[in-house]
Amino acid sequence: MKYCGTLILAVLFASLALSEDFKTTNGKIYKDATVSRVEADGIELKTKTGISKVYFTELPQDVQERFHWAKPDMPGEPFYGRWAAGAEDPAVLAKIIAVATVIIAGVGLVIGYIRSRMQPITIARDRRSRPLRGKSLK
Picture 1 (cartoon, rainbow, N blue to C red):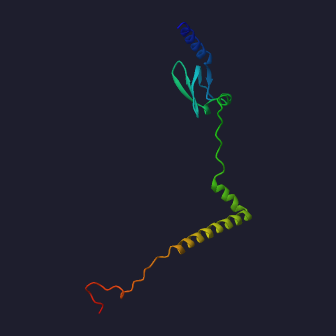
Picture 2 (spheres, rainbow, N blue to C red):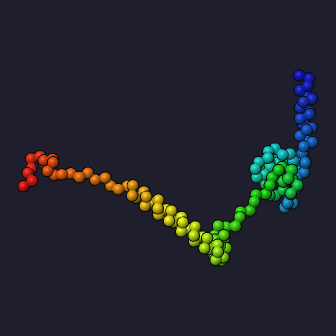
Picture 3 (spheres, one colour):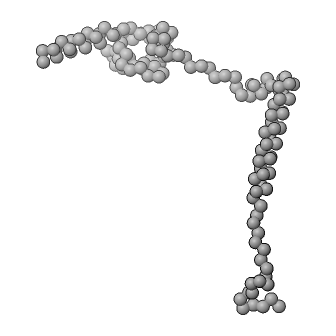
């Protein structure tokens, strides 16, 4: 019981020791802020005025590195850009046409095989083998 007061004081001083000033790239300053939560896209800062979320893109590079945040990679060249570059080179264009031809031929062969296996089943009926009820064939 006598250590309870000491524990509370230690926690209070630890929280004061962890508070620091954060300055964003656009000039906003968060004084005596403590980091209450680290999220994937930013950090939550607790100050005297309340809780604020600051995105990593708004923080300087050293703060981003401290919280192990890496800037997402930019998307690569668009798909149509690669086709346009291939169309300029005759050798690449010939390869594209050859691959497309092989794919189309393969799909055609698969469809032909499936259609050959799906022939309709017909049962030949002989009218003479089964007499009609009550009616004559004459």
